Image 1: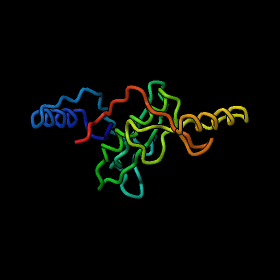
Image 2: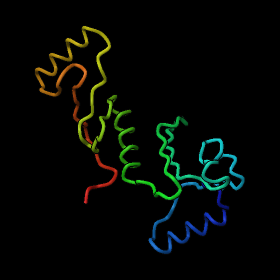
Image 3: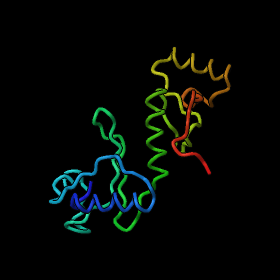
Image 4: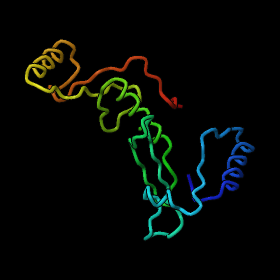
Length: 153
């Protein structure tokens, strides 16, 4: 979504296609008066009354905003980090895991903490047997059939 016109969006999409062969198949919203951008905090009045900052929203299939990235107008987006976050959310949801700081796609996730003392004791036994953690509050689980969104080069 941007405050640019539909014609501007079409020209941008066409230019990308002509130069790269890549087709942009997702919808792009023309928000000419900035109404939607203001509702989502994408226009910083201290910077500009009309220009949007570079926001990225990851919205799940239930319409819940799961992550927001905000970049100043002068700074481009970090696509690898956006894709890493998207994959971390998907893996976390699919495996009921917590993804640690600096998580790398397809590396183990953290098991959520046990909810009672009996579960804590079970977790400690599991850690002893599987050597998959440091303590009841920090134990790991390997992911099944994980594929990276972007392969390392």
